[in-house]
Amino acid sequence: MATAVKVYGPPMSTAASRVLACLLEKDVEFQLININMSKGEHKSRDFLKLQPFGQVPAFQDDSISLFESRAICRYVSEKYANKGNKGLYGTNPLEKASIEQWLEAEGQSFNPPSSVLVFQLAFAPRMKLKQDPAAIEQNAAKLAKVLDVYDRRLRESRFLAGDEFSLADLSHLPNAQFLVNATDKGELFTSRKNVGRWWGEISSRESWKKVVDMQNAPPPTTARG
Image 1 (cartoon, helix red, strand yellow):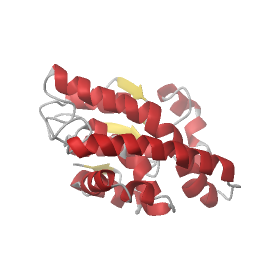
Image 2: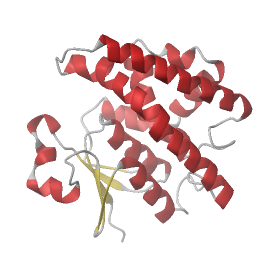
Image 3: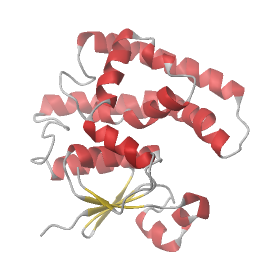
Image 4: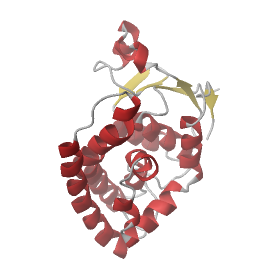
């Protein structure tokens, strides 16, 4: 009998929630082990054996340990290719290449400004930290330019990498969720016709709704997609 994979990290973490969404899409059984970062559990000696940079998530599959959410998602999609959403990481070289190019766009173009905005607007107030108005203004402008590119792409295609939902779309969910629902920058998405349509569709997937439920409730010990 297969052992459930383990995910270490709080569901509120954008990176951890990316992995959780992938596991749910792939219908892979997992055990969620919450890491209390306010208590410094991510800097403990045992955790650093799994994640040497002291960040979340960390991931275990039997004797295999991985870190970095996008790498974990690729691994899960490849290893469990015949489970759940079989097209999540493409089924042929061209599909995979298209997914990869938009994953790169997410990591290099979308994530930097959106992460700054999520921290400044959603997390800093909770942590009672001073916000940086200049950083907010600069990164909102950067993100707007990225989303203009996305809007043009989504005028031609239902999803970023083609006509099927993929890791390319899934990877955007965590930061976009906070920006649309927990800040005053949601209009960056909703004011763009095609981006708004795309966001409405990907954020209503059952896998992501389950992740949001996990974020809004005490995290369960085990879960299944």
